[in-house]
Length: 136
Image 1: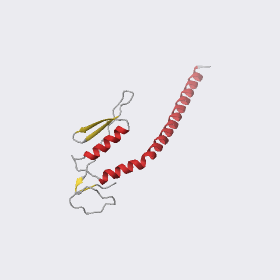
Image 2: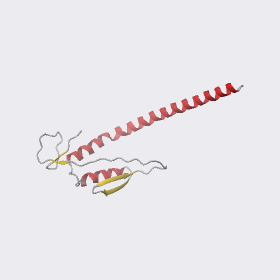
Image 3: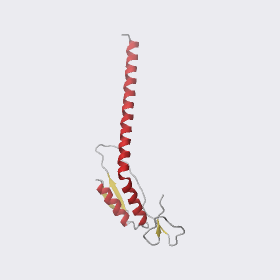
């Protein structure tokens, strides 16, 4: 076998290896996404109920005690390490990976606005006087 054939064979083998790896990765990705979708569907109703409960009991900025407690308990229930009282009523859920790598942070806000006069009727009204929380 001459050098040109060896180079072509190497190139062909490299192409086949990369193609098969990409195909395997895509297949694994599809299986992973199906698994994530299945798991999300299994908790969907519960998550909707939690969101509605929080919206029925909105808390003004700096007074989010109930919401912080709910979030902290759910994070603990998911097996995360939890820090509370961060900057007031802030909650941090910590998921430690098994390998070194970058850190990812997700921030959300859970306060409402004080509204002494409501100019609209909510299909799920707040149970806390003077506050409202519009669902999106």
